Amino acid sequence: MIEIKGLTKKYGQFKALDNLNLTLSEGTVFGFVGANGAGKSTTFLILATLLQPTAGDVFIDGVNIRKNPQAVRKMIGYMPDFFGVYDQLKADEYLDFYGASYGIPEAERQKLIPQLLELVNLSHKRHAYVDLLSRGMKQRLCLARSLIHDPKVLILDEPASGLDPRARVEMRDILRTLKKMGKTILISSHILPELAEMCDEIGVIDNGRLIAHGSVAEIQDKLRGERVITVRLAGQLDNTIAFFEEDPYVTNIEQLDANDGISFSYKGTEEDQVILLKRAIMNNIPILSFMEHVTNLEDVFMEITKGAD
Amino acid sequence: MKMNFNNPVLFKELKLRFRSPKSFIGILFYLIAMCIFVFGFIYATMTVSGTSYFRPSESFILFGLLAFIQLGLVLFITPGLTAGAISSEREKQTLSILLTTSQSSFQIISGKLSSSIAFLLLLIVAGLPVYSLVFLFGGISPLDFVKVFLFLFVTLLAIGSVGVMFSTLIRRTIVSMIATYGTMLFLSVVTGFIFLIVLQMTAFNHTGTGAPTTSYLGHILASINPAILFASFLSQGMGDSISEMTQVKFPIWIGYLIFYLSLTVISLLISVKKLRVNMKRSK
Picture 1 (spheres, rainbow over the protein chains, first blue to last red):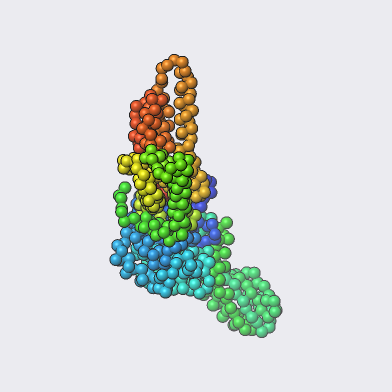
Picture 2: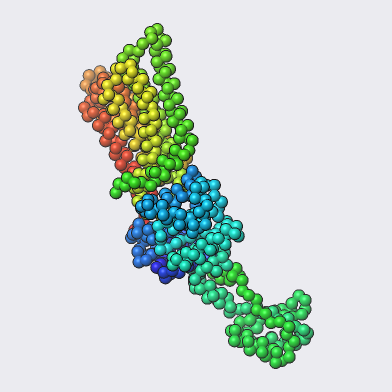
């Protein structure tokens, strides 16, 4: 559905995007994660036909955005990270204006608008002035607006930024519904865990380069090369340290603060880890607990972007 | 460029404009300014002449002055209405969403311009009852009236298009407004001033020779100055004397139409071309 080939955007000597390549199939929910200024919004602006790329091509459903931006606009629904609303317009009038802007006949718009407001849980605000809605409501209304012409692709730039926890949950629920509807969704965030739950694929961008791309599990596995394991003991601290030091995959052994165990980094596979635990028990090491630290997605992101500098 | 009369931007703009009390206050002050002038003129004329009636010739002077006042008001209001058409959308962060819709650039630009022009026409129409006072006293032919309004419309269309163009090219509304007011002042004041200088210089160069020379520059300047054009409408002798002074027989109203319609078309073409980024590969 989306094919990005060698996409580059330069501002003078500064490369905001550097040879970005990405292919997404229909119905994929793709999370674009990166720090502020990494190149997420630049990519989205190009996809939304709002910014001219310096080099490279983008195809949406086979249509080149350089050659036929007008056709691309009909296929995409774009929600920018920062957007304004027209004061003095009511929620239904706001949607009606954009519906008319996409050439949807009035009779059809009148049927669509209540459905869209229902989808984003704003039916009760139908006649409320848009500028009086809360930020979360405006975000949801803007999402409804981006859906009015039933686009195949949704480009959502930080849709949950600045929302309170309840509004975030509501936004996530709506995106799940859209995923079920089979939309191809590109969604950006600088918070990886926020995307992990709802995305099929994740791309990590840093300094304009796509430095990791795959499923959430694949990206987490990238860090699994080195896990941190904590072992709590019922004694024999010195013997235990000596035992683990002999293992070729164990490094950075440290005593726990309470002197009741150790922690170490482990580079072996999960099978190797099972064998290590079996061997420790067979060597009569008094293990109370043997625990792998669950890798935090924030740590994954920090680790990946650290390596890219 | 396909003309779509079902223009969503136009309807949205009109809806927003008439939901704001500012528009009604604007109309109120426009009419108050017109009324103060008309009734002030009538009062002053009657006081000076010591009569309680109004002669047709005085009525024509009133019509002329009223036309100038209206021209001044329109020239003053048009940049304020149009110079923020696109840049204010950009400042309110609504432009990017508007540009991702499937509306053509021409539809957006024409919608913005038409809504401002519609408001200006409303101002002019709202001022008609004040003009009707002039008809009450006679001395004005319907043709004079139509001519003045037709050229007023051409002028506001051109200045409005220039405003929309600057609003498209310049990111900030305040800068766009300064550029539009600057253009308006150049066309309505500076050209008149240069016209006078050019005529003086031409006359000075040939003093004593008795041979009048042709001044194309002077004629062009006269043809693009709204005040000179309106003066030529209100006084037939004025149009003839300009032709005598410049030695160019081409009617200035035709020059005016050509210049202002070209300015309108060029400004709108630039606006349409520059509204959206060019996605094609840069060479």
